[in-house]
Image 1 (tube, helix red, strand yellow):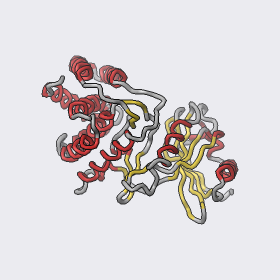
Image 2 (cartoon, helix red, strand yellow):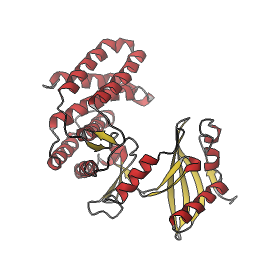
Image 3 (cartoon, rainbow, N blue to C red):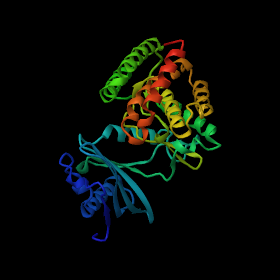
Image 4 (cartoon, one colour):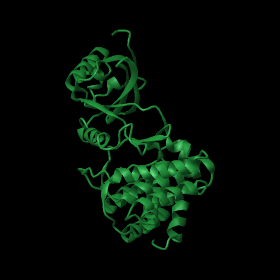
Length: 337
């Protein structure tokens, strides 16, 4: 056991709010938990090979990879742990999806990563790592239109899963988040205060005017980084915000991220508009209630939120005013604002 490598570039064992991480990175303790997991689930023994901390938000959450030997094959398990307690809701959601049409052999090539088990001692649940590439950069490739259509199909499939969420998200919630975020931008850039205040008024009008559609379970954080492409199959990732809401939000959020990516990487907000239009067309074809009006409304609101997101990364700060201008143009041009 002493030969097992432990890579902790963030020094997470010093996090006083997550003291259980010390055990989650201790090879002998981890192996003991894996032995219990295999016994409880009557599966093949899991033999630990390596531990790596791959993502960390101090005092909040941590993502740990465990290389293991399982049934004579080397695989990687991803452990998701958080300070406020074991997220059994997301783990059970993944279980329900996996056993109801989202497994790795589904005919529509739309899946979720396989849930493996939970380790309460680490406030952690585990899923099998999928080897693939996030959709963000793949959308730039020649087959990006077909990928965008497949992603729209995945969103619709999730909305039709009929798994009752424990939370809800309304247009009022969406607008409240936007107000909170953009007020932080005003604090950073006081010279933009009047423009942002006018934009918030326009966004409030837009939200009020957007027709309320039949709600369902939605991802609520649906964008290209949350879709993993593995061959001809796609996997939906990070469902911890799953809630009852307007399905149009997911597609609006997705295409807004494509617009922002296009603006930032290609210098033209409309450079990938064919990908966006393909997603909208496929989603509205599948959905009996979705409308272009609602999707475009959520796109605008998400783009407005990106004004704030741009301030969080030094390399994106030069796009803050450009995004603000884009949102202003959409507000003026839209007949429903």
